[in-house]
Image 1 (cartoon, rainbow over the protein chains, first blue to last red):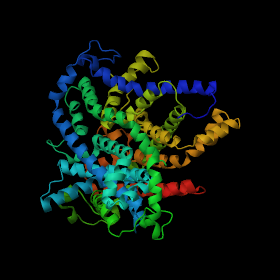
Image 2 (image 1 turned 60 degrees about the vertical axis):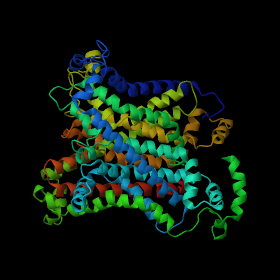
Image 3 (image 1 turned 180 degrees about the vertical axis):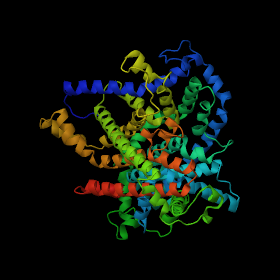
Image 4 (image 1 turned 30 degrees about the vertical axis):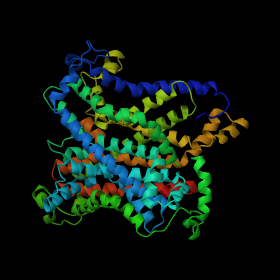
Length: 284
Length: 333
């Protein structure tokens, strides 16, 4: 986005150069540590810190899978985050469509209530939710506690409020004439939603999906209380490398990198949508 | 999109919405049941996972809920306000520790939110114009935000290690700034360690939101200002920052709530026992509940925390919304 037709003054250019250089360093150092340490032999990460590995080895990338059952955690995280994302996006689209296209009683109450759940400290409902899931399990036989289902349910509501809020904003920017035309052409309201509104709102929907996936992939508190050995996710599983007698820092860094690649790659590929989605939606 | 508006414009004149008293918003069709049906899944889930547990949490805060009653929490005896009295009795150990944790959290939140906002805004403003490498830099800056919390924080744990960490290696061995290697994850330094990680992880969100906000400022404003002879810095002060006001109002609030409630960062950084200097309130309550198995007191503390956040949010929205209709609209949303 170009701004003024004039060339910026030197003072501006210099401040920009210095600031962005320092910031790049701040951002990059941990990333570099993560990558370089994941390629070091164990001796390099137990002794004094080295900027460069004494020898490059891919050994940590082989060992991570046997030190802890990383593959199992990976699959668990993938199932939980994937399912939570799909459900969260579908539900958010329905809600946002209702709020942006219809007048109804309780609309304000709904949006305010949903948004205000964002301010709840997670710690307030951790234990009650745990008790609730156990009780539901005892009463109906549906295992929520310790199961992936319970975690999916929990995570999808974490991303729901922000997703609804962002999509309401985004749908407001989709011209109403579009869905009206579809209604006139004989589509029902849901037909208009799926054939016209959803395709036009793809950038917003992708942005919300990225957000929902990241939320579920990175959560630690509920994952550490609500999972057991078979359903453990990466957030908890990664701590397995440091509770042993030796701390395998090279393996921890390798595992961190492996679990980060799917989200970071996805995020960077889709960040254009995220900015577009935010521009049209949340910050309009 | 522009090609479809012209025929749709013609359709609007005959659409049913225009006739039923909504000439301004013809798209809003009243149909009693449908919107509620569409909202139902979201409502049910919010009820199940947020609202019902919150009510249970409030009920629990009035009970003497120790490990003996955890099998069937409803049978725990009522204690009235005793849990609350214990939490706010600042002369007794429990209350004193809670007050200390609260103050640490306040200081941490103010510094972290301030720095995240400052760095994010500065980066977004500096990157408003195109220059070589801007796209790459933007992607790079979003990496800390995109990384899963535990992966990012665990890397910082490694960097803060006493014997084999990067921070001591640079500060002590390479620059000679300290007499001996420092401890970063225990003792007073832990506050700065936590702050550094929190800012590193949090500023890209501010960057992202401000960047999106900048795109909505009309170019003509800058062009007019440039014609009037306003320089780059003046444009920044007179146009950019005032235009970002509504965006900032929401951004600062969201950052505040996320930072104040943050559990993941301190939990991964310090493990289950946070050092006193970095004893954030979420971890403190978690400890008070799960280590001492006194869930009644833990719940009372959580309720107090929620009340505090409600009051702060309310006051904040009142203060920042007055005098600006745009601000008020944002505040309501």
